Image (cartoon, rainbow, N blue to C red):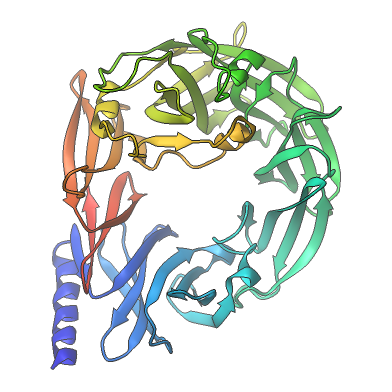
Amino acid sequence: MDKFKSIVFFILTTAAAFMDAQSIDLPIISAKHILYSSKVYIAGIQQLKSTSLKVYQLSPQLKLMDSVQVELKTTKPLSFVELDTLSDHLNVFVQEQKSTKVSVYRFTKKLKLVSSSENEFVTTINALSLFAHDYYHLGSFLYTIKKNTDSAGNNFFLHKYKAIDPTKINKYEVVWQFPFERKFIQSIKIIDVKFDILFCYVNINSGKKAGQWLLQINANSGKLLHANKISSDNSFYSSGKLLFDTLSTSFVMIGQKLVQSATEAYSPIITPKLPNQLLGYYIKLDTTGALLDQQEFKLLISNQKLMKPGVKKVEDKYLFKVQALTGSLSEDNINLELDFYKNDDASNCLSYCNTLTKKINFEPVIKLDNPTLTNNLELEKFYFNTLEADPTGKVCFDSLANLPNWFYGKPADSKLHFATEENAKPFWYLKKQDAKTKAWMISKLFFNGKIYSSKLVYTSPNYSYAIPVSNKIVVLSDTENATRIQLLE
C-alpha cells in the first residue's frame, strides 16, 4: 500500500511539474540543487522500502525534463547530499551520519550514470572536490593549492592534475607541482587561468619580500614566468578581480588599497579614526610581466545613518570587495561591481550594506563615473535586529592577520542574488530568519519609481537554500518526506 501511495504521489507531482512550473513537490529528502549547462539539477534521497538516490533534471522554468534513480546499499541515516560539476560531469556526494566515508556518483548532463565509488574516505578526495582547499577547475584539468603548517611556518604547493578518465571518479594524475618559497607567506589565491597562464595572488606578511604579489605561472609546465609586486609604501593591496584582453595580451586587476593606518584600524586593539573615503587600486600588466599602468582612485563615503536601538555609537569603518569586472580593455570600457561593507559596533565583523556598479573612466586619469559609496538603508533594515549573536548580513575575520583572507572569502549569505532589471535598475534577493518564529524569509528589494521597495516573496520554517537561475531564485524547502522547489520572482 505504501508503495502504491508513493507511485501515486510521484505521478501527481510529475503532472504538477508540467502544469505549474513555479512550484514542484518531489518525493525526496536532504535535497540539493545546482545550475549546470543551463538546467537545474536536483538530487536527494528517496526512501520507500529501500533507500535510493534520485536525480532530476529541470528547465530554468522548473519544467521536469528527466530523472534517474540509483539504489543505495546503505540502510543507515544519511547526513547530507552535495553536488558539484567537477570534470564537466554532475557529481553527487552522499555521506552517512557519523561516518568519515562518502559515496560519489558521476552522471553525464543527460543523467547517464557513468561511474560510482562507494565508501571512499573523505581525505582521499580532499583536494579534488568541494571538500577541498582552494581549487580552480578548467576542462579536464584541476589546479589546487595545498597548505602544510609546521613549526617553521606555512608551506604552500600548487598542483596541476589531469583527469585520467573523466568518467571515473577521483582518477587523476599529477602533471606538475610548484612549491612556493617557504617563509612568511600568509595566503595564496588562484585568480584565473587564461591562455596557458595561471594567475596567483600571494600575500607575504613579513621579510624582505613582504607585500602583495601577482604571479604568472605557465599552466603547461608549472614554471614561474613573472612575479610582479603590486603593493607599495607599506600599504595593503587586497585580492581583486582580473580582466584579460586577448587582443593586447594585457590584463588589469582592481581591488581595495588599505594604507597602513587603515589596516591598523581593523586591529582589535588599535582603532584610530578613518577618513571618510576608501582607496582602490588599478594595475595593468602584460604577459611579459611589463607594468603598463598603475594608479589609485578614491571612493567617497556617504553613509545614511540607521537608528539601531541598543547599539553603542562608534566610529564607522568600511571595506569593499570587487565582485566582478566586465567590459573591454582595448576600448577602455570597464565596469566594476563591488560589495560595500561597514562596521559600526567595534567588533571584527562587517555588515553587508550595498552592492554598487560603477563605470571606470580613463581620461585624463582613472576615476569612477560616480565615486561615492552609499549604504542602502532598506537593505540594512531588512536584516537588522538587536540580537548580538545574529550573523545575518555579516562577514567576520577572527584576527587582523586573517584580514587578507576576508577579501576572497564568500559574500554575506544574506545576499542571495544581485542583478539589474531591463531598465538597468538594480534588484536584490535577500534572506533572513525571523528571530521569534525561526521562519526563513526571502524578500526582493527593487526600485519602484524613484524609491526602493521591498516585497516578501517567500517564508517557510523548512527553508534549505537557494540559487539564482535566469535572474530569478530557485528555493528548496524540506518537509518530513518531500522537497518543495519554488521559482521566485
